[in-house]
Length: 385
Ligand SMILES: NC(=O)C1=CN([C@@H]2O[C@H](COP(=O)(O)OP(=O)(O)OC[C@H]3O[C@@H](n4cnc5c(N)ncnc54)[C@H](O)[C@@H]3O)[C@@H](O)[C@H]2O)[C@@H](O)CC1
Ligand SMILES: Nc1ncnc2c1ncn2[C@@H]1O[C@H](COP(=O)(O)OP(=O)(O)OP(=O)(O)O)[C@@H](O)[C@H]1O
Ligand SMILES: [Mg+2]
Image 1 (tube, helix red, strand yellow):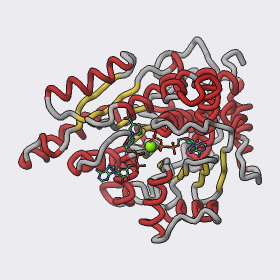
Image 2 (image 1 turned 180 degrees about the horizontal axis):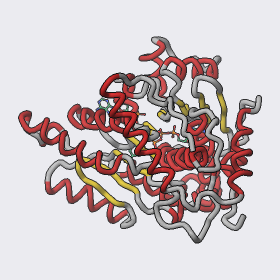
Image 3 (image 1 turned 180 degrees about the vertical axis):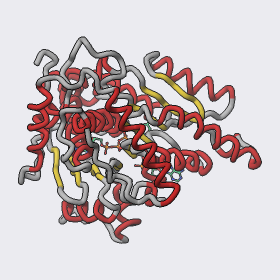
């Protein structure tokens, strides 16, 4: 089987050798772990996935979601539906990475159990608090409390500590199907330096990355981290988008020409995929613009963006697997997985939000929406199909 490269064209010399061997190892790993993923409906779903490029700006989101979602197959074992890592969390924001991780876990149901959260490690006391809060939210989450903030580390120890963090992440990197970077990460400079190295490592290993929350603060100030990487997805909210537009385009957000501006922004960042969250979610990879306007919820409780980032990560990894499947069509543009994943993630979240709102009205909270993810998925893509 021939696998097309070309996703890391920015590497040269020794870096290229290192990167390409990491890419090769990772592709081999993905193919090995695809066992059981070559079900008969795969061909049909591949055809459906290819039909995304229609002329309409409004995406055929529910059909895309159905085409991407693997059938439930008793012959599969845990982890075969994908492994997602969420890198985020700090003393203030323990909720955000949890929302992202539990959403990914709920969507893949019993097929995925390996979710990793890297949350900040400040001291034994905070380590216990941060770690135990995640564990008590859900014992199914696997938590790696390894990140630290500046004030808990002496200057002379910083190199050593960041080396240890990277070594720990490196052990797992090639097994991940997607990283979510940034929910509740905070803005501590030392912490962000470590995450910067993790992003570089993910890119060298060809792992898709969904950047959200404070991860967007980081990449907006260091665009090289994602620029030209087709497996990067940025999911800015209204403030994060404004900062991105100001930094990259040097102007203000223009809602009159929202589609053109988004297209240009994605192009300027070298073809990354941007999902601009709002009344309609707008998605562009610099080549095309799609929108998802499925009715959601008028309630704007904090945490819906975190659900979205976890959902997008799952769908991006599923499209990638479809593309890399031994019987799959490897000619699909490498950019497509991220656009398709964004469309599906957005559709799922918005439908879940609308179901939750019907029941809870003004008291709808993020937890209520997470509880409706299963029904949302079932409504669009029944488990019995
Ligand atoms: N329950 C939770 O733990 C939640 C945490 N969240 C996290 O909260 C963080 C902020 O997200 P928002 O959507 O509020 O971000 P926004 O950028 O929309 O708003 C944050 C506001 O606070 C300011 N700000 C934040 N940190 C600052 C700092 N260190 N120095 C100066 N100004 C600062 C920003 O400039 C902005 O005005 C993200 O990491 C996000 O993931 C949200 O996801 C909501 C849920
Ligand atoms: N005005 C709106 N009307 C309807 N839906 C919206 C609106 N704004 C956002 N959404 C939906 O809510 C989801 C989350 O977007 P939001 O702007 O709340 O993200 P966020 O601020 O990053 O959230 P978080 O609090 O998790 O950080 C989006 O996917 C979008 O579908
Ligand atoms: Mg957010």
